[in-house]
Image (cartoon, rainbow, N blue to C red; front, top):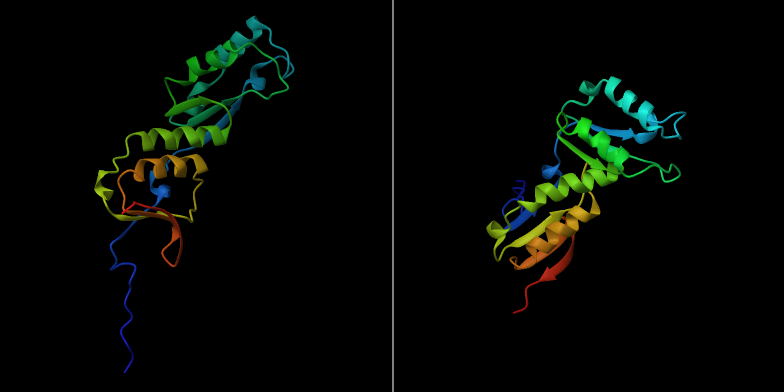
Length: 169
C-alpha cells in the first residue's frame, strides 16, 4: 500500500508573501520627450507646445506612463513637466524616468500601505520566483517593514529558502 503524500509546506505555519501579487495590472508605456522635439533633438518652445496640443493623448488612457528624456538630449526640466500636465488627467500613473523607474514607483506606492501586523511573530518568507517584474527595491521595502514584527524572515521557495533574519531571543 502506498504512503499518503503530505504537503508539509501547506500544513506549516510559514507565511509566504508573493510580491507578484502587488503588481498593478495595466499597460506600461515609455514616452520619450524626443518625440516632440524638432528633429528629435532641438527644443523650440512654440513647436513643442503645438505638438503637445495636437497629440492624441487618449491613447494613454489608463496606462502607466514613464516620461523619458535620454541623457544625451539637453532640454529644460519644464519639458517633462509639461508632458506630465497632459498625461496626468488620463493615466493611472505617470513618472519621469524609464520603465524600471515606473515599476519601482508603482511597487513603492503599493508597499507604502502594506500592513505588516498580520505577520507579528510569524515565520515569513518573501517568495523568490516571479513571472512579473518585481524590482529589488520592492523586496527591500518589504523586508524593512517585516523585520520589526516577524520572528523569522527568509527568501526563496519553501524547498530552498535563504534565512535572512531571526528575532533575537
